[in-house]
Length: 144
Image 1 (cartoon, rainbow, N blue to C red):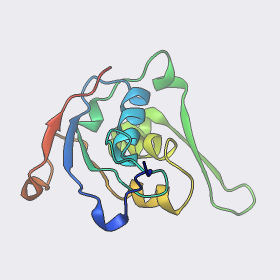
Image 2: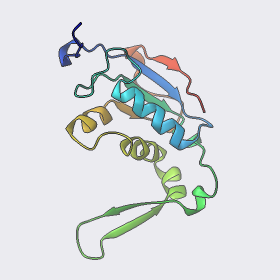
Image 3: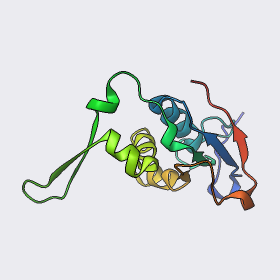
Image 4: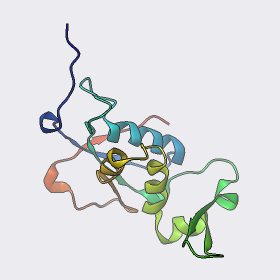
């Protein structure tokens, strides 16, 4: 019996909607990353992007456990001396809640061209509305 390998042209993608309200950030990110990779499908192939599109709504209502809302920060660097910027996670949740979810999912995807292609299939919105009704997305619930 031969091993099946999915080819990029054969992959059928589905649009899924995830409601992030009252879900812990890490659990949400890990489950969304699995869907973006395609690991929930029987035709999963590690070197081919077999995942589905994921639309995350209500990103502003995610939950952080423990003291993370006060203590956790995200960092970025400009590349110049003393160019390190520190942004508290509470500030990020107020200004751009979708960015918090996107960075959490990005950290759980492969760090190569395949991972960057997977991240492009993630759409995150802070509120309950999204502009992807034309794709007829299917609503799913995540554990956690």
